Length: 394
Length: 98
Image (tube, rainbow over all chains, first blue to last red):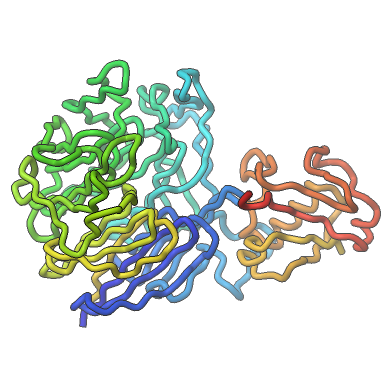
């Protein structure tokens, strides 16, 4: 019997919502790490019992948590309760929350990036925004962090090394934060080509490696951003999210600060697919599990009004790969709704029919078990939701 | 033994009570206390001071015997009552809320 597990990160802890394949009755577990911000948690495709979570706080910084039993118990990698916390020589056994920027010559890492006022600013680690477990190895996991950089662990999150060739890209000194900070927030592995990874940075844009992270290429041709001095600049675009269908990894969908975009050539060029959306500002974008041309977004009114247009919470679905969008409203509030849906807060499961989930800054998590035709709140009064991921466990 | 009082979230991370007791080698200073703490409870490394720069995290302060030690040199010898274990060394977080 298939189990569905929805992993919810919030401003005040993490929650796990569990159901059978009918997705009608849910059990809510949590809060885990109560009082801490959980920007993201995600299960390993290689071992669904393995879940990584990013736990952080303005007081105490970054913590990495890991579960090896599907979220029942958690530990900081390397620090299992009851086991020695140091070697016989007295050295710490691990440094699972140490995200130290590479300062060696390797990869020519930069030490400054552009600040809000145009001056150069030191790179400073703040938190992990996104955890991306490897498709093939449960002990390998990527972390997208603020200030923008990509880290990798190959020992289950116990230690982290920066892939500094990204931050060391010749455009690095031009990257700048948006209002929410400057972070690597999207990491997508290409299932057909293990050497290819896409990442996205607010507010720098999308980058691709075709050699496992040795070199990176900005792939922002076709994006136009009116809020930067050169709207067609090579970097500087506030990309909010990108999504692919695993079977067609060369086709990318993007929700940008403004504009919903598509690329059919692995990001080499982009074109606009906003079509008839009531607003093409938003944060999330995702793709149906079985229909690579069916795409979902949730329009937000504007960059200064982070709530749905007209107070109506509507998911928009395109079955044509963009441009033609239909509002999905059944079961969603259609008046007086002024929540936001953050970039990591939408996910699709792999069942048939496909399930779709999203969480709001008002603490609701909505689910659809029919591809978006109808929605129900799974839980309504959580803390503000940062992220939603889902696992279908056979 | 040196007594150290930790805030709620750090107690949970280290799985300890409101105070821990540490054996500190050499002069008892903020730095030697934190060194000993991170060796005994490595999961706290990076939560009180930065892994690399060793700078105190901005929302935390250090107190002992009614004195604010946050801005004094981390190499300054701490008060005798802390060294004797009569008074705790306090790690205090900024108040959340308003």
